[in-house]
Amino acid sequence: MITSDKKLNKTLSIVVPCYNEEESVPLFYAEAVKQEPFFHEKGIEFEFIFVDDGSRDKTAEVVKALRKEDERVHLISFSRNFGKESAIYAGFERAKGEIIVLMDADLQDPPALLPEMYSYIESGRDFVGTRRVDRKGEPPIRSWFARRFYGLMRNISKTDIVDGARDYRMMTRKVCDAILSMKEYNRFSKGIFGWVGFDIKWLEYENIERAAGETKWSFRKLFLYSLEGIMAFSTVPLALALFFGVLFCLLSIGALIFGIVRTAAFGEPFWGIPFVIFAVAFIGGVQLLCTGILGMYLSKTYLEVKQRPIYIVKEEL
Ligand code: UDP
Ligand code: MG
Image: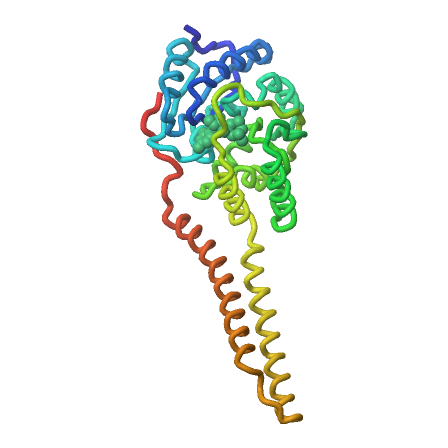
């Protein structure tokens, strides 16, 4: 049984969101503890916070088994699948450490990078992030859409959202508290991490494929997530509605003046039925588009206003 060591005066909280990761969790734990000697020398103890995001497999049992061996392992089980964003929030709330690191359970975030990340924290940085320099092993179509998404975000959002940035980040308590202070329900972590600021030190590494299990992100989920990001961190789509509104008002006034002048000067009939149908349909379409955009934001505001909890705990150890 591993118990907490009183000689160590600092804690590194390792927050691991897990959704159906029964195979990955033990592999992850085994790899992570290999980094412990380095941290012990610095007087730092590990604390593991596994957040079981409503897994349908034996993830919770596997974590409980680890907890029997190692009392520094903690488990939070959600009542259903709330999504990685909620799991991150719950993990951060429970983290007691002075330093916090967020890692995936599938070993795509290599624990071997922990000492290097820590070295930057030690030298005074508050936030260390990691980026993949390639997207090896990913379907090309997915990479293409991902790149378009980041390109778009750069143009329409003031928040710094970096292409290839992973959620594998180490931070000081200050940064963790700042993230926790953002209590919004629609959580887009990549945006939140950028929004809180602090001088991020980026470490780069090559993409690593999953150790076990399979990705939880279908193309559909990723697409919805990207919309989440756009709506959470940009109001440009709202301005777009305004832009089109103004543009078509001006155009219609122009058309009206043109029609009046033409009828007065040349006695020609005011535009025919087909034009009227076109105009009505076109303006109607634009209005619907704008209303749709408004509706999207409204639905987000609605959820926010309700102040629903970000997650619900079923069991906590
Ligand atoms: N995850 C989660 N809840 C979800 C989906 C994913 O907690 O609804 C966790 C998952 O168990 C993993 C991490 O988030 O530890 C990243 O997920 P995944 O590896 O499927 O994403 P990818 O690496 O393919 O982007
Ligand atoms: Mg993964």
